[in-house]
Image (cartoon, rainbow, N blue to C red; front, side, top):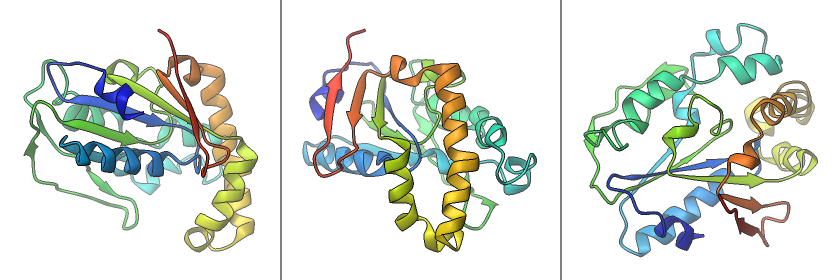
Length: 213
């Protein structure tokens, strides 16, 4: 998959989206790609949509288990474009911030402004990255695919400590996250927007396909 990234030529830092459902394996894919690209001498910025969440009071204003709230109220896309995606884009000055929010403490971050070398690769993972507000900000679009049942099984292990119990993980996924993904698929058809699809039902044996566009 590094070949797919390195085959894209731009006159500015390369902005790569790594999209997919919660617990599909997006972070692992992005982290692995970062290691491989750095080993080849590329400068890499790693960031995540969780660093651009709205504060809890705003993102849960429709209720903690609202799928519409999850889809519409979770992330500050204006700030993401302003401080990260646009500065790294074709008309940007390459002066960026990779995070504005700490979701664990529900507080804003004041990150130093850095300047990216022109051949930098931004690897940005998260949900809903191929929606209309962001779609034209990416130079390469990767979608990590896994069935919702597989992602729920992984989340029961990953998120139990964070959410307090397996029952709460199940409720959060079945009431909020999975219906929000179904809304995303119905309105945006993200797999149709992707340049690369990673089939990740078996994380030890992922397969990927490069889509013609």
